[in-house]
Image (cartoon, rainbow over all chains, first blue to last red):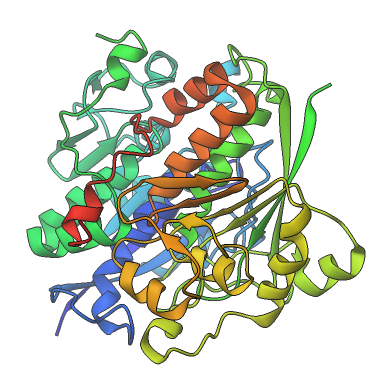
Length: 231
Length: 231
């Protein structure tokens, strides 16, 4: 029997959809062996995933202001998840509200930060994409750790987060213990593929990469550090 | 005043979310100049986009079977759009139901094919990602044209579509007249960036590429043709 991995995607209004949609499609491709059409020729994975989309309320989530993206539907509120006592295996944290970079004041929902702080100590993996690293930082997850984030917002992220974090300017993603943080937006899919390889092995990761047509990159392949003047 | 471009994203249950979410985030980044935080330093675009998500009904859309993706909410039904007489500027068609590759029988909603056939003759651009090319083919849009599609499903797509289409095995995306077709999943974001450059110019496209951290590729960069034995 494959092992079930429970993933909590932590969202709110103003989320960047591209920080988690390709990653969840990649991670859930570990379930493809069960699909009547897509399952043909799929290498067996020792894992299957279940994914919840957590938000402050069950109302449809509205993506980053000004982006005419579709609204989507959460499966669980942060408050209900915290009250239930459920422990998730993986937290996946995309970019949320960006007001903090202009005002210095966080409009990230307090429930989201509280949920991350409650879950992180016993989660097997905690992962962020782009400025989702701000939520991890504010929840105390990055204390004393190496991490990366959006290269366009690199200095902005450093300015609003605790000083006990070692930000890495040139990396597609950074792994420190069980905390994985990626660069901006598209880097999340690359980190998701690396995570599949870490969990389920090279054959499964290669299969998913080749079906989703993501060119192979490593954690060292980061042209955007130089483009944004960070190195 | 920027020119408004209306985009119809054509979906149904069993859609692949990654075929249109990064592309709509990229296309709608042409609106970023209007954003109070993200607008700082954005090159002026001569275009803004409006995007509708069309589906057979207004019920939440359930993505490809077995993928625990979030459900999302359409903004318009195909029937209402056709009855309204509205003409969209751009059709964006992601992969839909894949049953056709196993059974030879299409379960793509008839309304979706009818909508594409109704809109395509006067649309400024018609674009597909991955096996979304099947919907274009069944709507007659690809007759006599060069096009590409998923490299994993390349032969499967050829087997269920009319023989008067010239499928191109090695290309990240193909442009024939006003019809743009991309390879699988991740290629859709690359085509979206090329489309922004085509519409709004190099500066706007480069800005969006650098914020979303998509490495630069051209339509010739297609390692997956060889990986899938097509060349």
